[in-house]
Amino acid sequence: MTVMQIARNKPKKGYVWDYTTTLHNPIQAVIYDFQLSRAGQHAEDFLISWQGHLVCDDYSDYKACLKSDQVIDVGYMAHAHCNCSVKHRDQQRQQDSQPIMRQLYAWLKVNQNKAPKSSPTAKAINYSLKR
Image (cartoon, rainbow, N blue to C red; front, side, top):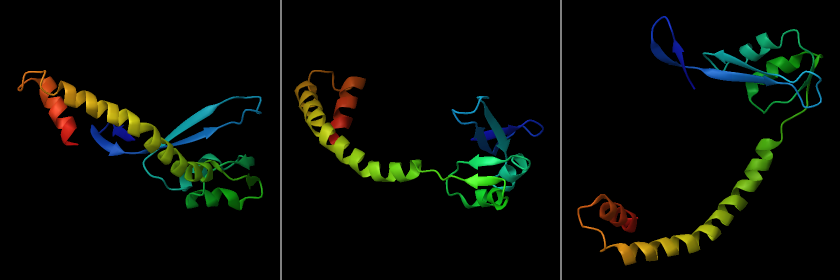
């Protein structure tokens, strides 16, 4: 994300740390903390007096927060799920898209000469057929 430094009016790369309560918490909240780096010190500073169960990915800079006996790492399995399902999803997309692409190709061939040669439509059709 790009964060603007108002004093200099120059774009400066920044990061958004988000902190969210669980569905079971009586207070439902999301807090966004904008910082200029990914350093774990930002999370450590934010969570300094907090105690509870921390759900976070395996980003090494979170480990500083876990040194306290007040914070328990409960893991984050979404990445594991994503990595396993990506291959299946890609195979399914390939399988599903082949008939659609064949239909599109056939339509492009039928309509290739119907549009004036210098028109945007003809250019788009010819471009697509070269792919």
